[in-house]
Amino acid sequence: MDVRARNNVTVSGRDGAPAIVFSHGFGCDQSMWRFVAPAFEDDHPVVLFDHVGNGASDVTTYDPRRYGTLDGYARDVVEILDELDLGPVVFVGHSVSAMIGVLAAIDRPDLFDRLVLVGPSPRYIDDDGYHGGFTADEIDELLETMDGNYLGWSQAMAPAIMGNPDRPELGEELTELFCRTDPAMSRRFARATFLSDNRADLPRVRTPALVLQCREDAIAPAVVGRYVAEHLPDAHLTYLDAVGHCPNLSAPDQVVVAVREYLGW
Image (cartoon, rainbow, N blue to C red; front, side, top):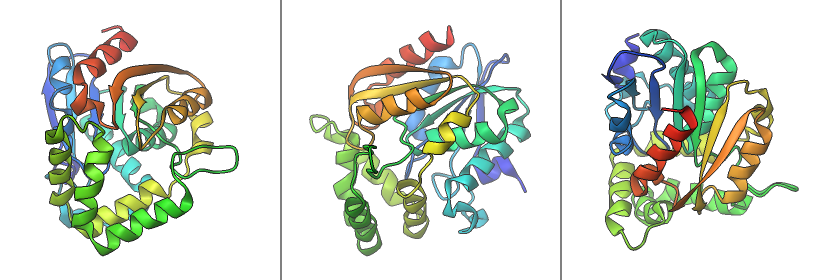
């Protein structure tokens, strides 16, 4: 299998170590990093890719069994890093890709130097003593709406996810990204995302991590970011003075500064 073609892998920047890998969230593609990734190209190799079913990935390789859980996406990350052979990398995962990175790092810690988790959530559904941000009924309704009217769901949810009503163009861009993806693949990815529970995986991570949390986030509230940082064995929590779930688009300069400060770059 051509892993690079499968995931539309692109490598830029300069030779050196470690490489930095950017992984996008649900329903998006690598363009979500266009305001962040270039800031690192002068000093390090920069890797971008699309999850299968998104962007310019090879959708003929889509396997509903493999991508029925986040483990399948984590396997892709491991295969990409093995293929590139760049040594231990800094993995920057946004939203669901934060947990995808966590799973990949648990499986193959030798491939990871550090993790940067942007808006992570190990579980979106509230549980006994745990606040994930959504009730089980709310998630069921969200998934049912996707099944019945994916276009309508995209148009309604994208602005709420972006969380910057004074900048409607950001919500419009996210809507367009959602609508580019195959609805059936997106619905399966949504189930893998919103029904996952990776809380027990956090203590198993041995890779140092930075948790980047927006001060207001309707998808992954601040309490969730704090939970992730507290349950990882080696984590640093940084709050961004930003609103919404996509600071890589709405506050990219803050993301760059926070990552550089953490990495010492």
